[in-house]
Length: 414
Image (cartoon, one colour):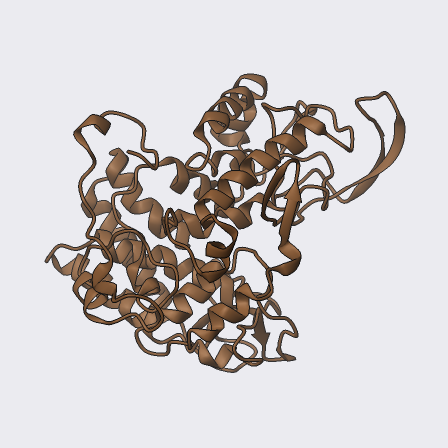
């Protein structure tokens, strides 16, 4: 739902919906989440301590089955909510209500409660078994979790939480296909937080020591994915420097079948339905078009040709709404009909012009801050000093797009 809340402002910018229509949809969504019951019970609730369960029943909004209270999925919701809050900045009643509801949702999350092994933040919790015995460590999509926890207006965690997280990067840093970077096999881990935060020029202590920022790291990760598909170490049919992108997605099925590799070798291979796919990690020959598409901000020079190639070679992936899917085996003529809104929404956010800045509330007391802030909370963001860096008054205000960019596709320079 976080990506959906970001999609509404993007829809306004593209002319798909009116501002009034988008505001009504955002308001309905936020009212729904704000009104859902919370508590420690096993059933009849949607969350606890401000966090939400990973899966909610589509009709009731209550916890589905025995899924976990998820810190990262709550973060995804909040990032989109903060985006909507910054976009809907007018005095109209609906837009004022949106801003108030976002303050409520963000403010009631008890991040410190999730630090069961402080200062790290846990993956989640269940009423049946308590906290999951793992914390967010190593480089992955959890950057947004720590940013939001550090910037909480009501229950922030101490800056040491970020230091604790980056201290676990050791095993992630290294070389892959000729490039040195923080590695994470599924490409989405290099993309999700960047949908809302522009990390160009923002470096924490770890990245300063390495001589790059997180934006550059994601650019390198994109090129590594292309190089992996070109090298094609597992011999999957259809992989190339034009058709690439291994990331978490649906797949063909949970089954083992005979397969003929690019070298003509026949062997039995295991295929998977859903998996957190990555380079050399659960790579069953399934490529996710959203994986390449969501990196368009980092490397448009290789992403755009990839999307064009996917469209031309497999029209079902990008050409027919009923056949779009998050993953498709590139040698197969048929595509999987199950849609993955999370994945497709990430690509939409990456490819669309952003009418609103990243959520600055998540950066008020963090080592990494968005490049610009505006909206009803901008003054608050600038008035509160950053506990570990310079004053947040140093965060620049957003400016309009350059006249030379008008009519051009939105990129990081436009």
